[in-house]
Length: 422
Image (cartoon, rainbow, N blue to C red):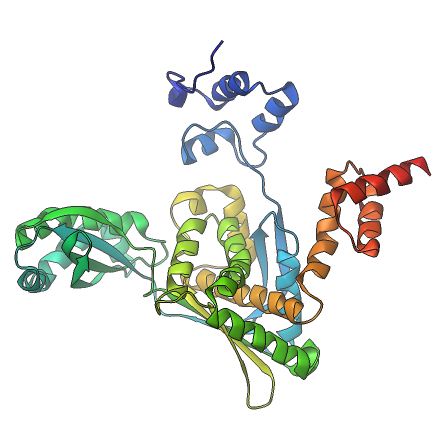
């Protein structure tokens, strides 16, 4: 019988019914069906409301980074990630600057941008001015979209318009500048852009196509900085190795891609743990890293007047405490409680500090023992389990792999066989 992905009424089925249909299609055995049917600490009914066509959930390990002092306050930081060494890296970086005050942070604001694209505008330069002349009408329309946001001190802040030369001709792009306060803000600014679209067409004589937020949230920059004393990180040679690694990333996009991936290892883990949008944050960060026209480092490292290592980071951080999974997911709510945050601003600042800490640890490892020593020591346990190790066998096999300097599944299988035969 030919299999088909055309399953009538699939979206109307209950999660268990969908799972049965998928199991029949893919030939899943009973154990696989049972695992997929176990939604853990997320109620299946809630999962079915969060996204479409739910059949189960994907559990990701949730760890907690310690040793982090941020703006004079000690913080425990939940991190959801499947990659070994990520949580440990933040703990180590925090420990090494803890006695020197930890991390200082700030945020430029909680402002988002919505874009409205108008094409076929006969007189784009004059139309740009006509839009700017309508600032009062634009403000009234935007604020009417979300009176609750306005009551909380947010809402419309400004309008910008720019003429953009493209391969498809001249476009007139209107930016709505909106303070979204403790919300990430996508729904709010998208609603405003859609409401303004007919007016933009009337004022410009053009046709509006796209009306949506920009994830390059460069009015919402989170910043963090810290100083690591040379004596706490292994001396001048280690300091200079870290700075050299940073210079490499700043100059070379091939290095910067991996360098910034390390930054995002930490950032995305906290964003995910708090139910925020990892893809939006990642898109904004990487776009910001390329704002000069060449992709470069999100972090900076320098030598202080006292000869110590100064690190800093600045990047867009569009996160919120209200709306979506952040408000609905019980684990996300618990993570916010662990963090002790009561504003999106504080959350963004903590996340920036985590990104800097993650990057420091990665650069220190690269500049000294190499990234693999610490990473593979932790990864060895995963390899041991993949080889079939159980219980205390996992630690014993992993220790043997690390001691032998070769962390591979075939080696792990051989070690496990010897262990069981002894």
